[in-house]
Amino acid sequence: ALQAGIVGLPNVGKSTLFNAVSNSAKAQASNYRFCTIEPNVGLVDVPDERLAKLAELVQPNRVVPTQIEIVDIAGLVRGASKGEGLGNKFLGNIREVDAIIHVIRCFEDENILREEGAINPVSDKEIIDTELQLKDLDSVEKKMQKTEKNAKFDVKAKAELEVLQRCKAHLEQGKSIRSLGLAPEERTAIADLFLLTEKPVLYVANVDEPSMHTGNKYSETLKAAVAEEGAEVIIMNNSIEAQISEMEEPEDKALFMDEYGMKEPALNRLIRSAYHLLNLQTYFTAGVQEVRAWTIGQGWKAPQAASVIHTDFEKGFIKAEVIGYDDYVQYGSESACRDAGRLRIEGKEYIVKDGDVMHFRFNV
Ligand code: GDP
Image (cartoon, rainbow, N blue to C red; front, side, top):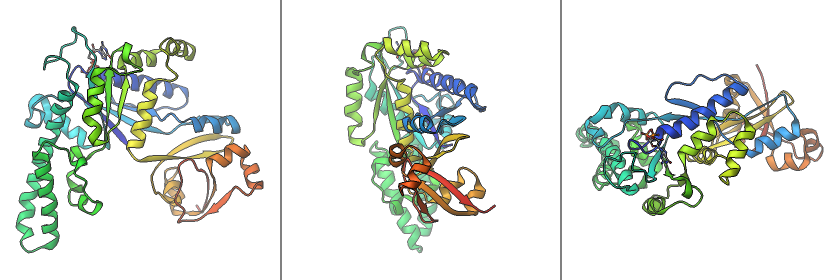
């Protein structure tokens, strides 16, 4: 599964958020399938109303959502890029994730220490950004040294060097690579570096309970500060999320959420946003045994989509029977869709759409 990593300064509510994630992961695991969770990795269901709707129509023996992995990357502090507080190890962990969930403290609480003094979400964000940018600068400069020699006689190396120079200048201005606007072919010049500030990011504004629906002055300044990046800010209260996730009985959960005026855990919003941030989409399989959601990338063709069920499906792919999600819901069943001419036969070149209900035919 693709991974999103939780980062942020100490005492902003990262572990609290991760506990909420891993508690709900445990609850899910006991429901229908076993999953191994490392101490800092939680495998979590992606909430999807469409899956519930299909299950209602098909009444299968089991319903299996798709999942993403959330990794807790604790321990980032000012100076991490210079090796402070095991900084290099934690920065290395970020290199391995596909997207970043950056938790920012937007709550006041005099009992919870903030080393840098008064609450300041923008400064918190910048401290972390700076560490990631310095680390990237290091990677870029190292590659520049190697590329410079070749750039004298090799046109490809020369083009790469130009991209690296732009990256360097951008980072030196205190900006992140994701805002540099590199073209896809330019991005290949730095693909081998797995730059930290190139990864897509979303922000969690961890607010106190009275502002959990509205946000507060801190989350507002944060929003304004990231507007230019076009990044999403999710307003939530991590402590409440952790409490919800600890409750075992669905009725208790519902009652608790009702009391706080919540329709669903904010965690669901976060997970859905992380899923979109990763450019993922979903197709479904719907049979009496199982109704299930599967994760694929955008633009994937049918055989590649089939491979997430089983690698043999890709090799032996013959064709796919496809029903659009809206058609499936409108006509109510596969056979009704077939009768209405809403079941399409698609071949190897078909680009799977979000929500497609698929049935693969293949040779073994
Ligand atoms: P981390 O260092 O970023 O992992 O932070 P923790 O999740 O360990 O949280 C640090 C402290 O802040 C803990 O005592 C939490 O209970 C507390 N905390 C987390 N979220 C909130 C919140 O939304 N409001 C308040 N008042 N305290 C919180």
